[in-house]
Image (cartoon, helix red, strand yellow):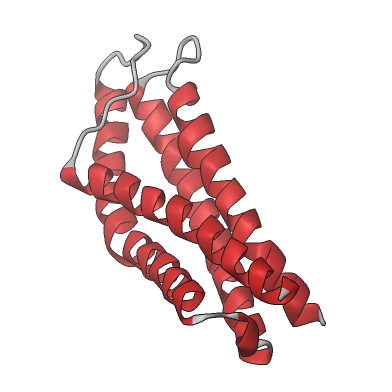
Length: 155
């Protein structure tokens, strides 16, 4: 029964976290008075590091629940969950570490230059674009997987 609750709840919790952080908080942060590009990127690195670790815990809980109640996870729902987990793995193992190097370089620039002018959010690198795309992939896949699981429970 606990596995059933986790399988029907966690994809939506994960989806909500991504929407709140990636698509609401992050763009708004750069509109705050006095926010510099270096400070915004540094805060973003910390927030996304924490978010990715929480996402990894959610993914592990989903997989554990899936092992106990696999009959509720159709092939399509399973493929969408695996796609979301793979996107998270790409972010944690490839994209965020590479972007972290850029964050450190920006922090050094902020120390040596006057970075007090507010900035507008800007997408700087192909890695950043890939990270945003992987967030979008999860935002599409997770609620669909969750809906498919709920429909399997209701059937």
